[in-house]
Amino acid sequence: MSQQIIDFDTNSPIAADEYEQMARLALPGYEVMHTFVLASLRSYLPETANLLVVGAGGGMELVRLGQGNPQWQFLGVDPSAKMLAIAQQKIAQHQLSQRIKLIQGYAQDLPNEPVYDAATSILVMHFIPDEDSKLTFLQSIAQRLKTSALFILVDVFGTKGSPELEQTIATVHAYWQETGFPVDKQKQLLENFNNGVYPLSEAKILELLQQADFSRVIRFYTGLWVGGWMAFKG
Image (tube, rainbow, N blue to C red):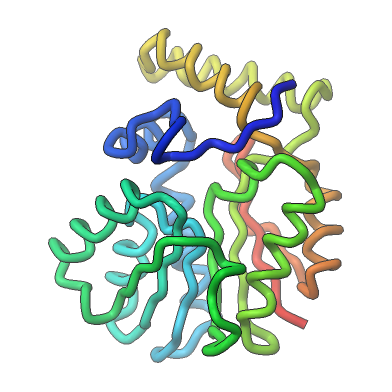
C-alpha cells in the first residue's frame, strides 16, 4: 500500500470546493453525525466555552457548532490554505467572524496557552499514515486542553483486509448504489481509501487515546465505517 498523506492544496483527489458535497454523498449519516457532535458538546460544556477545532476544513463543522451555541468561542486550525479560505467565507456569511478564528497549520504548532474547554477532530486522523504519528497528533491536542476537557474524535475505523471491514465496505458500496452516487466517484473514493486513508481498529483507537492521556471513552456515533468517540482529558 502506498503511504501518502493527502494534501488538499497540492495533491488532493477532491477539489477543495467539492469536498463537502462529496462527503455528504459518500458518508452515510454525515449530517446526523455533526448533530451528534453538537449534542455531545452541549451535554457537557457550559454556555461559555473555548473550543479547538483541529482540521477545520471547509468550515461546516465550525458553522454548525457556532450556530449551536451563541457564546462559544472557536479556534480552527488546518494546514490547507484552500480549505481555510472556503471556511472563512462561510464564517463571514453566517456572521460568526467575531467568535471564530482560523490558523493555517497543525495542532502541534499552536502555543501551549491558552488551553481549551473542548476539542474536536472530525475525519482527520485517518489521513495520518502511521500509529506513532497518530499518537503524536492526539498528544498535541491533549496538551492544549484543560484537565477533564472533552475531546470529540470522529474517524473511519476498522482493520484493512479484515472480513469485518470488507463487509462494511461492501455495504457502503451498496449504499452508494442505492443513493445514485456516480460510479466514477465511487471508484475514485475507493481508490483514495486504499491509497490515502489509514484506519485503525476501535481497540487500537482506544489504546492510543489512553496513551495520549484521555480516559472515560464513550462511542456516541456509528455510521458504517465511521465512528465517533467522546473522551476526557486526564
